Image (cartoon, rainbow, N blue to C red; front, side):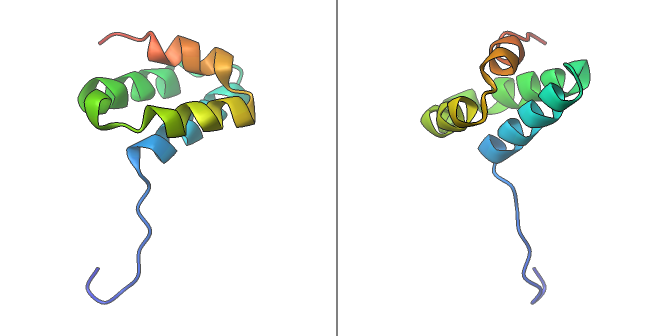
Amino acid sequence: MLGIPVSIATAEDTIVAKLEWSKASGGSERQRRDIGGILAMNDAALDMGYIERWVRELGLEAEWRIAAAWEP
């Protein structure tokens, strides 16, 4: 950007990071709500296989189930 290298997180990586933050904090409603919003806005475009791979790898299944069930 303007000649400066920048890194941009994908929606999938943001979801995984928010799942980690939620788990580390004992279950953050804010992180879960944010994830639900990302899912609602990008559902068809998300690489669910990628997300689910990292959910399993990082032991985030419980957080994922809760966040994925969130409804606006």
